[in-house]
Each structure stands twice: as C-alpha cells, then as structure tokens.
Image (cartoon, rainbow, N blue to C red; front, side, top):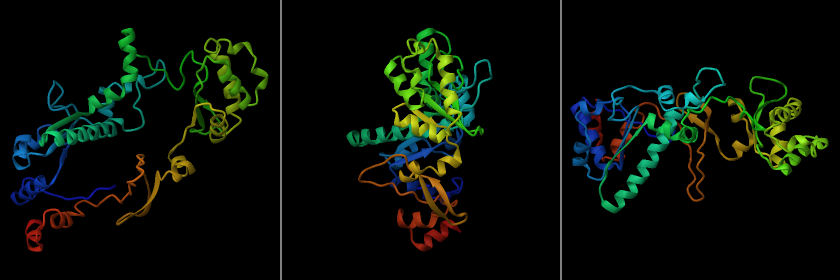
Length: 330
C-alpha cells in the first residue's frame, strides 16, 4: 500500500532513458535484486551519482555485496535460519522452528529505512549522497541480539525454551477456555516481590494463597504456581484473562490470531485495521500504520496494480508530453 507503480524494461534503451530521468528527480533509489543484476545492467553507484550526486543508493540484499556468502540467494526463511532466529525458536529437545512473522523481510526493510534516514541527515551536511547496504542475515542477527547475549555471557548457545521460561514462575503461555488451538494467554509476572503475587492471587480469586509460603521463593516453586495460574486461565477465555490480569497490573497478552486481530476493538480504534477499495479486488481490510504522528496522519492507500501509475509518473514527475509518453509505452 501507499505506493505508485511504474514498470520499466531496463534492457530497453527508451526505458533506460526514463530510468535515468527518474534518478535525477529522486532522493533515494532502493534495490533488492539478486547479487550482480544491476551491475550487469550497467548501474553502479558511480554511474548513478554521475546522474545525481545527491542520490542515496540503498541496497537490501540477502547476504550483502561482499563476504563469502555474498553470491548466495536468500528469502525470509533463509535469513531467519542464517541469522540465528530459528536456533532459539522451538521447544527443548525439538528441532529449530521458523518464527511466524517475516522478520527477515520486514526487519531488513526497517533497518533499511533507518539507514536511509541517517543518509538523508548526512546529506544535509555534505550535500552528497552515498551507498547504504543492509543484508537480510545482518538484520536478523541484529534482531536476535538479546538471545545472542547469552553466548557472550556463557560461551554457550542459548537453548530453545518453548512457550515458558523454565524456573521462572508466571512467565509463559497458559491454556484458556474453550480450549481451541489459539486459546492461550501469555503472562509475564516473573517477579520475586510478594506484593506482585498478592495482586495476582487477588485478581484470580485466590486470596487464600496471598500469604502462602510458595511465594517466599516463586522461582523455586514455579511448577506449583503455574498449576494455580492455569487452573484459573482454563476457566476463562483468553480475552477475559487478559482483561482481569491487565486491570490488576500484571503484564499479559491474549494470543490473538488473524481473525482476532481484524476484529479487535483496541486495534480498530487505533486505526490499525482500515477499509480499502482496490480496483480489482474491491473492498477489503488492510493493516494500518503503527507509527502515529500528531501532525501528519498517515493515510493508507490501496496497493497499486503493476504499472498502474506509469503514465501519471512520467507526466507529473518527469514532465513528459503525451506524445513522448506514448513513444515510451508503445
């Protein structure tokens, strides 16, 4: 969404001329072709900066443009494997698992945006553009830094821990009613402070346990405490559990699937679910923008069809006449 689509054949001389004209008008050029594609087409930072010395050339690659893996192809799951995310995801004794979200793709894009913004600020001081590069592997490694710190501290790779933190009371995922595949709530009480556990027990109607000795050392008694928690959660829906515990100041989150997300009142009020009209698909819902700016509301527009805005861009941005546009497109 929020893009305009232009199609060009960079092996066609007319289209290469259009591409060059676009480079003169643009602040940033972002590419994520396979390694060597742009070079074979004759485009390097030197050739681009000769056209526009202020151009920022952002290269988002699987494994980067240098290093032993630089010629290898990558997709999101490959980056998650090679970036360390899979190794720490799964249950103890089980195989590595791929995290559900596309952190290899999205994480690379987010790091790329940070780099672009930094390059724009630098350009304000120097008047020159530059090349920035983000590899998918590097991005996933960066996002995995918390788990990587275990190796720095102990010299051993962190073990897969599953949905609960072993030896930590009130830290993990708990079954909820009515027992469906996504009927769980994640709780992160994980405190040695008795008053936290008193608030917890009061919230779930177990005032009789507020003075229990099990909370003298919660982590030592984590299995017993987890049984108490799950005895309560299994009698409540995940939304009920989140509401009760959240109101009591206990960090928690219902495990929301896609249907839950799209119908979530909180997300709807925060404009994270928006209605879109698409020229082919018709009306449907799309996820909104998580960044909320007080003076610059981000309106979500429909994803474009391939090449939908070619004529529009050539006219508005490049100032091409109708005849020239026809000569390029035809």
